[in-house]
Amino acid sequence: MDSEIERLRKKAENYPSPSVYSRLADLLHRNGALDDADLICRRCIKEFPRKGDVYVVRARIQLARQQRADAVATLEECIKRDTQNGAALELLADIAQEDGDLPRAIAHLERLRAVRGDDQALLDRLRQLQERRATRADEGVPARHDTETVDLTNFSSGLTSFLSAMGNNSVPPPPSAKPASGNLLQPLCQEAGVTGAVVFDTRGHPLISSGLDTEQETLLAAMAQDVSSAADAALHDVSGGRFASWLIQSHLGQLMAFRRNEGNLCLVALTEQNVKAALMELKARQALIDLGEA
Image 1 (tube, helix red, strand yellow):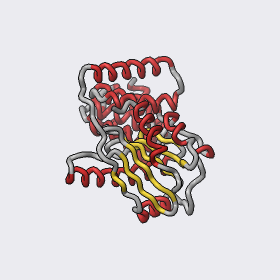
Image 2 (tube, helix red, strand yellow):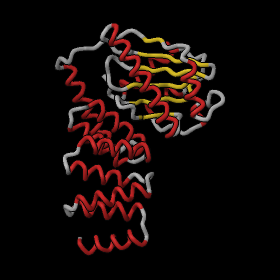
Image 3 (cartoon, helix red, strand yellow):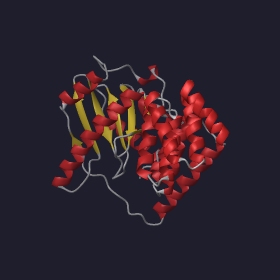
Image 4 (cartoon, helix red, strand yellow):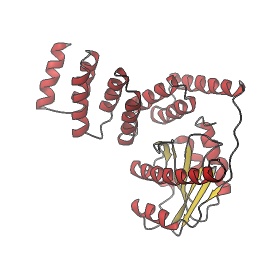
């Protein structure tokens, strides 16, 4: 192993590439040289920030150092940069499962399924987690009820700025013109007037999307996270509740957000102005159920 490490060190100095960096960092990690391994990872991320494999190696190093939160952040950054990185999604699912967060583990595995296809081992794991989650519910986890809808209609300046940031002068073309990255959202995004949708977690990190490219889904999730936090804060001051849904309109289009009960995942859709929220709600909530949300 030592000779291979030295060979890769020389190659990294003379002919640096993501694959060489990743292999070298992985070997150093396996050899117990965590500091050296992390240094190589950081060098690779600086030089090749969109290559995801080294993020996974660095996350494993952080887990070995008991830096669990840092590892999750590294993997989430990996998914932002490299949306099809199956190793990152699988490790995120492993961490969530170890933490007992079955909805989040299921969500990561569903996205992994969209990347890898119907791999039998993956399908078996999904089924097992879904059964465990159903068993927990049967054992008496109390039901939770939605709070009232928060109507943020006419918040046009925020949405107009958002659409401008996405580079649009009008509502974007329907999602059928773009490849969908999240098969669970396709039924919703195939509705007339729906441009795209994204599901994000409590940190505002996109988990699964359809009809949006990587930059669009990140921007949409970030804006929706800000509005959702404001809606939660306002409701908490009044009634102690949390939002179930909200709507923002402008002359360019509208955003609709849905959350099931008091779950941790939020689905936001970008639509034309004439699309009715009531017609969207059923499919949005079904998508959240399919993602494992309570």
